[in-house]
Image (cartoon, rainbow, N blue to C red; front, side, top):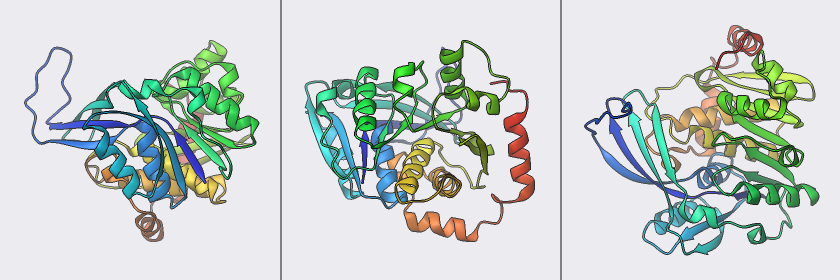
Length: 318
């Protein structure tokens, strides 16, 4: 069983021709609301895209925004451990451009109410999945408690911020994008790493996974660099793709897949999440992920693997 502890937001999404620059007003197109939040997205991905038994610890306000979030999680098969907060339910304001890029502003609200004492019993839990949209002290406490209980701790270090050595010492699998990896390494070493491979070696965590957007992803596992090229899809909206990757990866590991297999499963799930609008609404089923893997002839090609491996070793400029 997986326990996801983290944020839950209602996403306010507007489509536009492009993402506005500072001071610019852009006339938008369609507007919709979707259940979101990194924690809730990842919990849905664990259950739906990963097919794993999943619980979630979250905080919600006493308002109308809370119900769509709870409904989405429950319909995905997630068991809820809900903390009632006096603060409003968290919200995110998202602009999605016609080419699928996005810009996101989050108002944490109730997410800031999660405290160390809210962590439920870990009986039967194999993996705890955490993110950084809740108080860092709380994340640190959850990681420490879970690690001490022999539970595998997966941390998605997003949004990017400096992480202390104490927190990292309690993490078994760290998942970051390129910018987040750079933030972690700079905080730990004070230096600019020469390449992604060098950065991976500098992080004091047993396993580090880096998502690389349309290139794919890589992982540093037992002094070995694994690479997984991306699956080619028609991108509609990339919102939630990283969260889908994290949830699917954790579910795959919890169900006994090795890291190479888990990277492939998570990459396929993340790619499919880009083909629909919204965060949780775009997360594919495990059956859809399996179908993509069965029909794919692109992401495992030797030339794609070689190109991605070279990118990870080349001089790095983020």
